[in-house]
Length: 153
Length: 340
Image 1 (cartoon, each protein chain N blue to C red):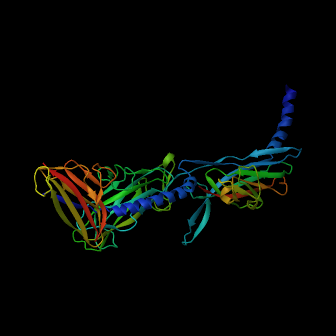
Image 2 (image 1 turned 90 degrees about the vertical axis):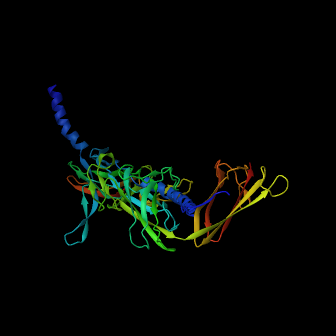
């Protein structure tokens, strides 16, 4: 029994490190026009207490490699929520799906089938998933963020 | 002699026709626009959840998957309303007329079910005379046409129309026209609709008052909209001539029991403009009996039943609805009675 506990104690931290090497955190902000004291206005990102149809949203995905080894081939996928219309990625290298994640590509590579069987080029509003694949491994201790935009339908 | 009554009622059938046409066009447009609009506006109370998933290679080989936290947003109620005149132009009327109808459409442009408070404003500028708005009536039966006795009188606060998102209701404003209004003059009445929850500067929030328990937020319209409708005085007048021919059972023209009297009613509209909903009613004279199926309008037979065609026999009088008759036009109605 004692031996087993020691074995577990030895195994658990390394297992935990391996499982939680990269942490991924999702946040969402709403863009609001804020009036400055001098009468001009600027766009501020606020944590939304209230959203209503038409509100522009900024989704921020933060990642951090908490482990001691680099994390290679890092791929982040974010399905676009049903009530949000995708308006674009702010981070480079995004690929999209317009068919629920079955096929991927740049918007120009994708098309949408119409009800009558014909097809048309995909538009931003058709996007169902956005995905990024980092070109290089995330070094140990490094962090970054990916952003995309949408609007409340 | 029989009694002849002429009832030029200026509800304007021509306008009603235009209204139906425009309502059809609107419905078609609404269908086209509605699909994306319905799909586009998220209902109040909807929760938006977002989370992302990441995969990466593990140092020792194989892949790991991590899922982010779920971040949730609740969609609150947006308060928006639009009001549009549905008349398609000025509504023609005459001086001193009462219950003259302006037609508006009030649409819930928000994303939650909302009640709207309606007000008619009859003293706005930009016109030649001030009509007196006497009542607001809701198109309860949804046919787009004012039906006295069928459509419901609006009482502020007691039957504010409640509309689902994107739904609309037709609202009639009834007004009296001043006796002094002159031919060619226009009078304006506005219909205002305000969200019952609240209105104001876009972005104004009413905590906890949105559908589904969230907040209600004033949208781009300010949750307060209005449109104007106009009456235009078009003083048409009607001249009326009634004549009778008698045919007795013996081939002559004597008035004896069994003689058949054919009445001929000729209405001529003079002046300018047109008379709307012109209706002729003529009581069957005492001592005579209506001969069924003898009503004609412009030489064509009309049925006695109160149905789709313009004529009817009520049991005591015949009536023919002439619709809108333009100045200069005549309408001829005939019917027969038998002398008792």
